[in-house]
Length: 305
Image (cartoon, rainbow, N blue to C red; front, side, top):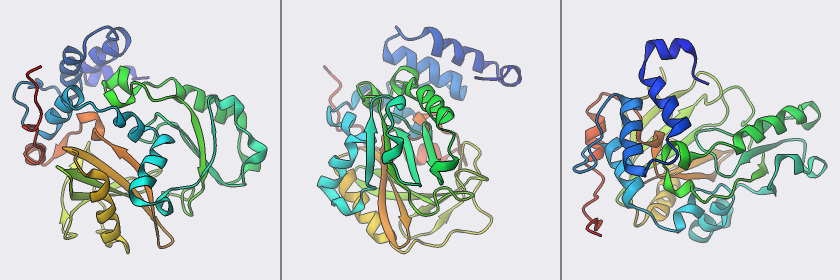
């Protein structure tokens, strides 16, 4: 819930909250225009989008393929991705349930990860390092709350509209529950090619984001005010492998982000994301928004019908 202080500091938060609550029946285009203003303070140009964020909003409306629902489903995406790059890159699934109350605790190992299949941005993720110490009732409560979150309703991210809300348990990857957790390697792909990789360190504490091009040149970019590390991260051992896999998974897409982990010398697929920060991320330097926008080709779409 947004605090009273945040309303005072940014009155647009009032409009955002009202839109969340009462905007369900609004068509997608006017809803996105309002949300874009409340989120960024800027007018959304859907007729001639130029920036990265504007084009992500445009793609929400004009790039809709049935397979996208499978691609963003944390459970269904595993089979989809394995069919393209191989089963060896998939984090093993330990169980899947329609209701958090049905989780088969006795069948789970001492360490595991629980997540909702329709979530994103770290929402609905529970990392268990010791099942004996886990507050199961609180875990169920947190997951039930996460099950109610709706990315389509709140952000009009079309691929999530028909994703079945479930809970999956996955194999625990070494380092996930440690302070800061394992690093994420997120490849921003434009017109089927990975061009940038952001390394996310300290996701659970003191998070930093570091942006690199495909030559591993560090770019001093920040998004949503998240700083980059004081010490530039080293190039991961399997960077080239991750880049090649991202290329396969991004084929035919005007824009998609392909995420991986590298743990104990092994690469694991994480998720596919069509709308980074749901198209509301604020870049520093600001011109990065337009530079990245120029990399997305939307001229391939026929919007006359």
